[in-house]
Amino acid sequence: MITQVTKGIKISVNTSFEGTFFKNYKMHFAFAYTITIENQSKDSVQLTSRHWRIHDALNELEILDGEGVIGKKPVIKPGESHTYTSGCLLASPIGAMHGHYNMVNFSSTEKFRVYVPTFKFHAPFALN
Image (cartoon, rainbow, N blue to C red; front, side, top):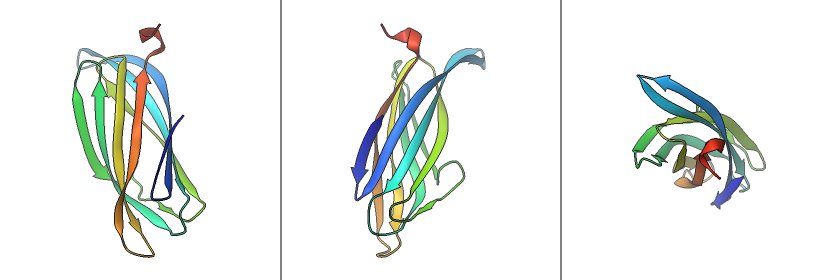
């Protein structure tokens, strides 16, 4: 598990390999990731948007920006957490992903970023 804390918001990430399949006549490698966002601060916060940088071993970079996470903009009270699972497709069996969440502090109305540490993807057959 990979973890990082920014401004009292702890991010924990677990990844798994889900398999291979063909899409548009190309082999793809499917990975899942589960992220827990834990509010260790004293204020309620809301996740409003996300920014991802997805890399694979073939040096392909995909940048994704979007509202919320999996269709939600969770409000996380002090001491609570929000967990979700999502996934990505890579053109190679090895890759990595990192980014940030844009958040709002409900007490101060401050907007801030919470950084998601780099987490790696690898198909079990791709490593010694």
